[in-house]
Amino acid sequence: MVELRCGGFIVIQVARLNGKCFYINPDLIEFVEETPDTVLTMTTGKKVVVEDTADALIQKIVAYKQKIFLGVPQRINQRDVDILEG
Image (cartoon, rainbow, N blue to C red; front, side, top):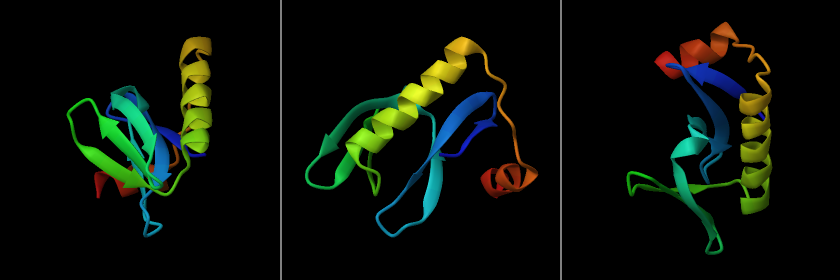
């Protein structure tokens, strides 16, 4: 699991069905459904289909929340920052 800070928010890495990875802020996920593909419904109403299973996403979100609440510093790799900035 890759986690990094982007604009002050900690994000997690997920993958589209084509395998292309991208980063989301898990605090913006409203629903996770398996239909059978995993569909994320964001608080904005946008739906995103991802390769990750619901169980894998829940594990990533729990780890994310633990790090937030425990105050574990996040390491940022310059390559990851370059990817996010496009």
